[in-house]
Image (cartoon, rainbow, N blue to C red):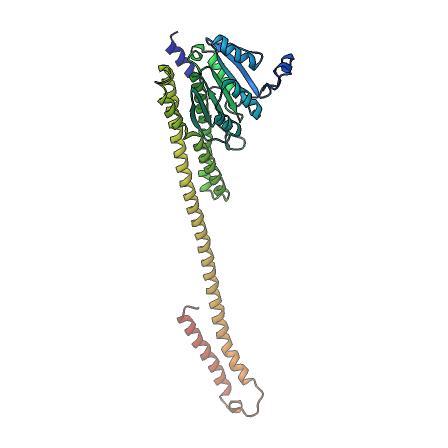
Length: 378
């Protein structure tokens, strides 16, 4: 099988691993521990030297440094949430720049690539979608890439660097390309890990769309929360464009293999597509937020309209009640006047006094009825 066929075969098998890397159990200290003193064993999750693509497993970091010098091998030391003394010991052995070491210790760095002489310091933000909680978690990974060593420092559960090692060890021809090949494999693993995140966010957006038009009161909070997660996800992916630009600028100077250049460009293309999907998600969420605001406003308008109609109906009823009360009050008023017990009332002894009172009551009531009817109160 040719070199190109092997690379193609390796590329087809990428991205098939789990998204978590369990930390191996801490080994019991042996006799070497007393000799090594404060050697950073507790933070080391993997330690190997690759000579011509073959993996050698040193018993200590001191032996790793010796094998790198004597066998001209590639050392790869993996650290998981190390203490400052762990990183400083390795930094002293490899001559890492103090500024880069300080960034690695403090973490919370934006994705970037910086050159310190012949050593690259790379900060990457892997991401994973936690389906049980429906949230996007963004981690942090620091890499020191030197002429004959790779130091990886994980501050989160992802990515699965153990799987990256396994795939590369199955393709020693890729390991022979040097530390840049390791950087490519890690970048490829991280970018491939973005795909499940995109699928999870897409499902969340579909659910939110259903909630918006179903009148769910909690949808506004969910839209805002997912928007924040998408923005954080974009902050993890977007700076990778600058990382690839800086890598390309050093292809000629550092004589990066042509096939490795093509593989890196392929990962860059995947990164661009991920960024485009994230931008589309942000636009969809913005539209959904606006649509939800419109739906809420329409719902409030409908409620106000119903309240107004109810109020108008009540006003109509009040008008009718008031009108009939006034009509009935007129005869009562006349009857009350003629019901007063006074001796000197002209109509009391009048022959037509009683019919006159009845006619007066009727005329006043009929007049009031037509007045209220003309005003649409009845």
